[in-house]
Length: 264
Image 1 (cartoon, rainbow, N blue to C red):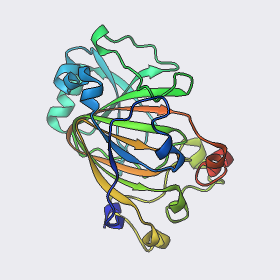
Image 2: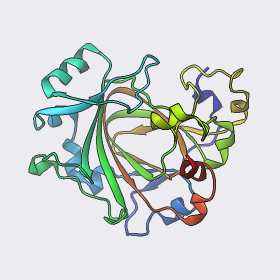
Image 3: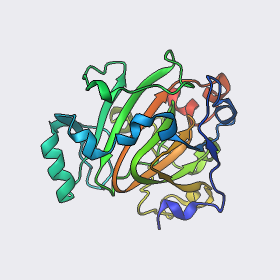
């Protein structure tokens, strides 16, 4: 069984691309994820940001290798020539690119036509980082939450996702605040559940978890409020960009799982 077996019949809300500095307030205040349509209309230049276009403008790319369980844990990275990454994509060898584009500590300079623009509802003062993701397909994340809000924009391919609200934290088996190994490996925001082969005997409370499954298509964006548990897996060659930013209220920090994050 997989994590998608826990999906309810509910579907994720879909809305037009929001405009204005406070446009996300209804969803962020309710800690409610949503699918936005109209990425290409808001950012016309991103229609070209497919891998074939990107590879002609990049000399190298930063990748991560999966662990033995096939999961990309964000624990180690290496920078390789873009030609070598081409070979990885063609042969199906496991690697997933995560290239920092914009944010504190990002020093790499991209060509002028590769400018990363912040959506109008993400204030520069709250912005943390933006990353480019490229995969051959089959790449999958851990079940985890982020302490920041995130907006995942799909530019090529598609990704399946499974979302659980913060209120389901008690059913999702996060690492203990006393787990030293998890702290050292920076896995404090992860679940211990293997999403591709769910073990209900080991994690019996997981049967009570209720989430929403969906698919993120090219030209759409997925808003994931801070503290929302999510699992994502890609289908075929995929290119996406993510924005992370802080905009949490005090009441959000005082409830799980963000409260656990501070203890950890």
